[in-house]
Length: 192
Figure 1 (tube, rainbow, N blue to C red):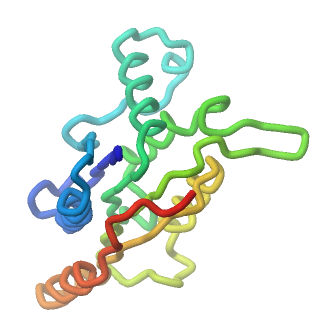
Figure 2 (cartoon, helix red, strand yellow; figure 1 turned 180 degrees about the vertical axis):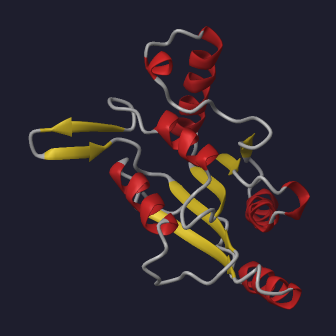
């Protein structure tokens, strides 16, 4: 089984989403003997934001990296994403990654009947850390965006692990982390 682990937090060792995404991946490592894990830290190793020169493939190094990012995503059975909420949505580094995996003809296509996802059969687990509490809030543009992006690519097996209210106080942070750890998803590949 192939697992792709993405972290997008800029907070390094102080990141709740990194702590929790590592716990999710750890659960898979503990239960799968044949697990192959690919990892990308989007803060330490960011993907350039999509530009005209990117689309024209003018930079050979950028083009090769974009191809590797896409291939890792396509090869993965499970994708674990540490996605903190920044300004009601996702970090721009995560958006840059999405721009490299949402590729016409590879992960989706357009038909006369509308778009069709081509990347189905994957399980996506998104670890969301939030300073405030945004579940069921109209101010939450993170979860709806991520659900839409993956559904557009044909992936409907999307789960969220949330730690909310972590900026309220040290106690809130500790309790949110404990609650998220207590509710980690099972480490199995769901039927496609």
